[in-house]
Image (cartoon, rainbow, N blue to C red; front, side):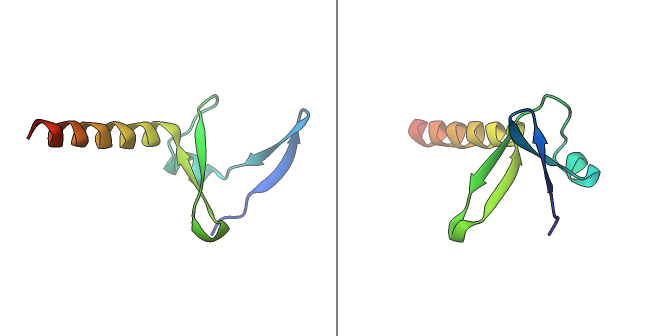
Length: 68
């Protein structure tokens, strides 16, 4: 588990991500990430590019099933 520090950013709040997490998620300044709520009140942080690639793969798989 990795602890994240919450800081004030303008009128909102932000999270400071450790460098190892930035590298694992392949993040850069200005990138978008998604925060998904999982079961039992937990959350998952994902690189938006990974989320889009997963959605495209699911759609393509569905399209191939329709062709069969």
